[in-house]
Every structure is written in C-alpha cells, then in structure tokens.
Length: 194
Image (cartoon, rainbow, N blue to C red; front, side, top):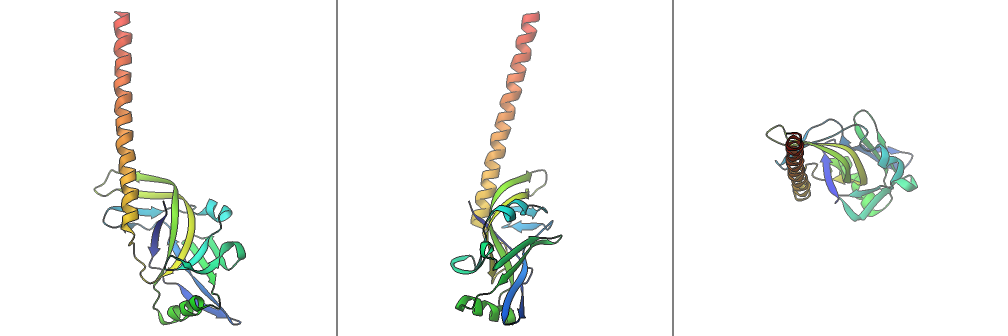
C-alpha cells in the first residue's frame, strides 16, 4: 500500500545555461514526525539505499501521476542519500508543468517536497504513550513538489497503524499460546517423572 510523506524542507530553483533544476530534500533522516496524532515516525539513514539501486522513480507535481516532471531511469531525476536525507534534483522540462513549477518555486508558492513509498522493513515501539514507527527500508515510488509540506495523508497512515496494531495483537496471542504450550509440556514431563 503506497504511503505519502512530506517534508517542510523548501526546494530551490537553480538556473544554469537555460536549464532549470529544482533541488531539495524529499525526506529527512532521524527527524521525528507526528503522523495525524496517531503515531510518530522517523526514517533511518540507509532506508532508501536498496530502492535507489534497483527502482525507477518518477518526479511529480502534487503526487499527480498525470504531471510527470522527471524520471530517474532517463537521468532527469537524480536521487541521493546524504547525511541529511534523500536529496532530489529534477531537470525541469520545458512543459507547462515544468515552467509553472519553476515560477511557483521562484515565487515561493511551492513549499516543500514529498515522497510516495511502500514499507519493506519497519519497527514499532509501543512503550510510550504514542507509538513510534521507525522506517528501516523503503521502496520509493515517486517524489513530488508539493504546495502543502505537511503530513496530511492520515487515511493511509491510519491503515498502517491499524495493520501494526493487528500484527502486535496477533504476536501477543501467539506468545500467550507458546507460554500455555510450554506450561503444558512442563506439566506433562513432571507427571511422567512422578
């Protein structure tokens, strides 16, 4: 299930030799983000490493698949993990979306970057009053320039939280069943000895 997250790191517009490049960060590492007052999430360094080696990723405007502005496989989108997070550079096309985005970045109308992803490996910590989800490996599908760089996609986040809660409940049931089985085995061994 594709999830989306946004970062308030404002992208910038670079112009060189007639080319316009949008650059910024689609994700920041080790930054705790509240996801719809449901849980806290953070992304660990290296979470994008495998997907950057193997997946083709597209760049969009506001997560709209009809508004493609770059693609990793053809070199118009460059992605790199650095110490800060997932760095993005997009060679803006000479299209309506590319020109509009360049103007919106110049004016400051576009306020952030976002990304769409599937979780490969995560970890939940239930010890506090609010669950904490740590993302260790992510399959990146797209990055987007967005008008509202906030964590708005609570319906998808809620499904992720519910899936984790369901998994936790099942793990607790499985652990209880294992305890009962161990106790029964111990009692059976005791009765045979006596």
